[in-house]
Image (cartoon, rainbow, N blue to C red; front, side, top):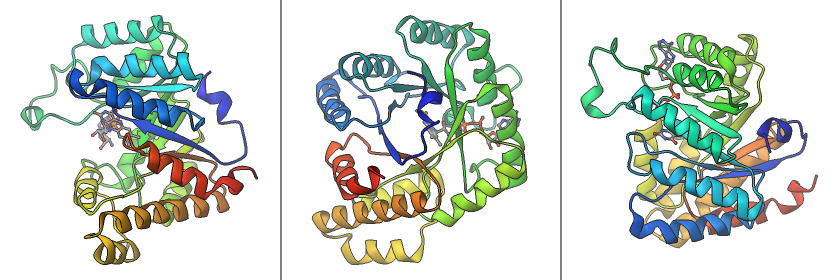
Length: 292
Ligand code: FAD
């Protein structure tokens, strides 16, 4: 099923994310976690892609498995910046042949050795190049792209970031998924600005439940996200107690989701990080709300 069909619905729905194993030795445990999440019947599940190899071979395998065995629509991520045109075209062909209908088109983070390099000879410099490649492939993919309510760390300012976001949407995106954020006002502000800029595709709000204190630094480093004082206080109080921190992090994410829905946001993507119990808890916390 193409996700464009799903986005037409007006009630709250949750989707979950899994990341593939880095080695074959952990494949089975990731597969089990994935299956447990699929049994929660999310609106869709996304499977991330390890830029430059590593986990990339498993993305397709897992996405195909969830779709075929559990009937849950999948969104396979694909990155381009550290790949050759030949590799990307081969991956697109595999997606097509496997019956994957939804693709998240990403640039990917620049590997350290590529930062500061002359980009003129790269096959792909930005996500927009991949979106064009997907469109030209002849497959009728529903294509999603990433967006950043707090701007992408490499952008000079939000106006520039939104300018290039519009270029991506105009190249053929059907929807956007946001980077994680911990203050909903940042999203509301961002939505206002992108709508004003003429970007009208559905935006899926990305929520990361922080379930242990170590995740906080990693999340900030990865996303540059602003941590509201309310969240910092919670980490200070419960960070040293793993069980209490997990409960508090899930409660915080639940609270964000309820506020999003109350403000008209219907599509929420939970960065569930291969933790089915976290996805299940959030879902059960809002079970009645999900019925409205
Ligand atoms: P782009 O859209 O290319 O933007 C990157 C930067 O370049 C921005 O500053 C933008 O303003 C600028 N820019 C864009 N187009 C142009 C242009 N034409 N000219 C000049 N500047 C331009 N990474 C993975 O490796 N695997 C994943 O599975 C994965 N999934 C993700 C899912 C989501 C929802 C998000 C938010 C991120 C994900 N990432 C993933 C991380 C992502 O690859 C990085 O954030 C990366 O640095 C940027 O990717 P992008 O697709 O947003 O890039």
